[in-house]
Image (cartoon, rainbow, N blue to C red):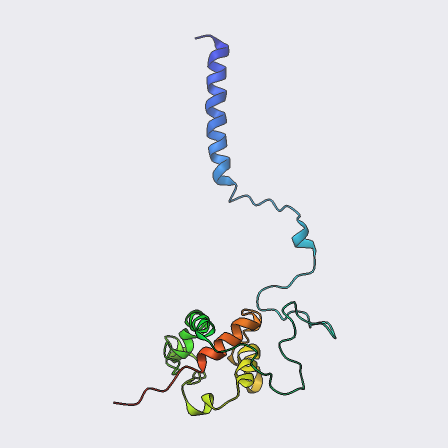
Length: 176
C-alpha cells in the first residue's frame, strides 16, 4: 500500500472517530445560539401573566362581565354536552374530586384542603354561573393559599360550561 493510501485510511478512521466523539460531546459542550425567543419578553412557568388589557374581549367572546353577577348557562344540557363534560372531568378534575365527584380523588389525601364534594346538596344548590366562576377563577384562601386552581387558561368557555352540565348529573350515593 502506498503512503498516500495509508494516509487516506488513517485520516478516514480519525475522521470517523472524531465525528463519533463529537456526537457525544455535543451534549457536554453547550453552544448557546441566540434565538428570537430568548431576547423577547416572556414569562417562566408559574409566573403571573400580564393583566388583560382594559376593555378587551377574549377570542371566544365574553364569558362573563365582572360586576354583573353570575352568568347564565348558554349551553344546553344535552347528551353531547354532558358526555363532553364527563370526559373533561375525568381528565381535569377526577384526580382531586374523585371519579364520582365525592371529593375522594387519588391525591385528595395529600392536599392541605380537601376537595369539595360535588355531589353534596351545598354544591348542587349553587347556580350554574357560580359553578362556572369557581371553575374559571379557582378558589383562593386566606394568605393566598390556593384551594383550587383556576382553569380558565386550561379549558375553553365551552369546556367549562360542559363541565358544569356534567357536575349537575352527579348525585350522592346513599350509604348502604
